[in-house]
Amino acid sequence: MNTRTRHLALAALLGASPLAAQQSTTPAIVKRILSGLADDSMQGRGTGTPGGQRAATMIAAEMKRIGLEPMGDSGYFQRVPIVQGDSVKAYRRERVRDPKDSTKMIVRVDSSVFTWRVPLRVLASMAAYDSAPAARHRPAVNVVGVIRGSDPALKAEHILIDAHYDHLGMRTPAVAGGDSVYNGADDDASGVTAVLEIARQIRQGAAPRRTIVFAATIGEEVGLLGTNWYVAHPALPLAEMAANLEIEMIDRPDSLAGGSGRAWLTGYERSTMGDMLAANGVPIGPDKRPDQQFFQRSDNIAFARRGIVAHTLSTFNLHTDYHQVSDDVSKADFVHMAGVINAAAKAARLLSDGPKPEWKPGGKP
Ligand SMILES: [Zn+2]
Image (cartoon, rainbow, N blue to C red):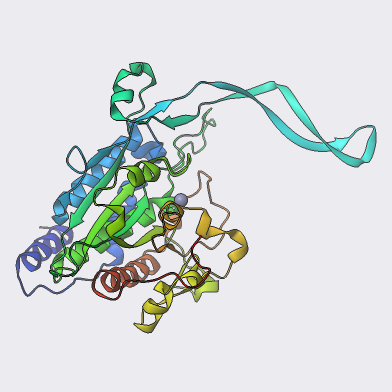
């Protein structure tokens, strides 16, 4: 029996006991999950690709192991009817100095180099998907599991803890001898790792007062496709969603947030969520880079626009590996990540068991 197996056996025993305490995550657990999701075999988790489906399968297996109730239309999978759109020929453009007037910049179109940009889109229904040509089908799923609330007065309400698991796929054409996989360790395998570890901790502790939905969404990088589908087809009614906490890019510390184990909330000042967490000692502060508009740049915005108090927790420090093949597990700081995930688990517990957060005046987008 190796250390890992012993740990699992212990966790299983604790999980079975009614007196089980919420077991914190550790750098070792975080490393195992992140390394799996961001492995080269996942081929960059592109939306509608076999690598993306492989990642969904791994996430569903983790949800099962944790003991979440499946809430998709096919076990933990919520199928999203994504098809390939028409191919478009695109020429590479670059800004160069005007040869006739060196004070001016012009856009030069290189007619010898072109790429095929293949837009993906979501159809209106699974029936429309089934009747679309099979060659255009791009199998894609959200992965959704639930822990039911225990409080008679609050269990009809729920909170959503989510992260997107898709990333940019493979670089084409492959660079000879170079890295071709957009592993997306930080973006956003780190957030999915957090969703799973928060779920495990809450499952092993006392039942939450409100119900908690845990979701890993597809298609964020290509236009929030999975989240928009979820908004139209929620596992539980959106009218009963008390809050949404999304997790994006937490695998490296951000010095502006205070370094290791500390995170920030996008749009912190817009609602009472941040103050509520801070008042309870959760090391989460305001976003120090509001000019980046992060509040509008991730899945949370789809829920916020529906009136639900929805924020993204992050520690993105504007590193240059963003959307590059170099966003690898080797760059992850597991001690930091474990610290942030433990803080996020406390945040989830406060949202499930505490007062419902509210928009501040003018904060609702
Ligand atoms: Zn992302």
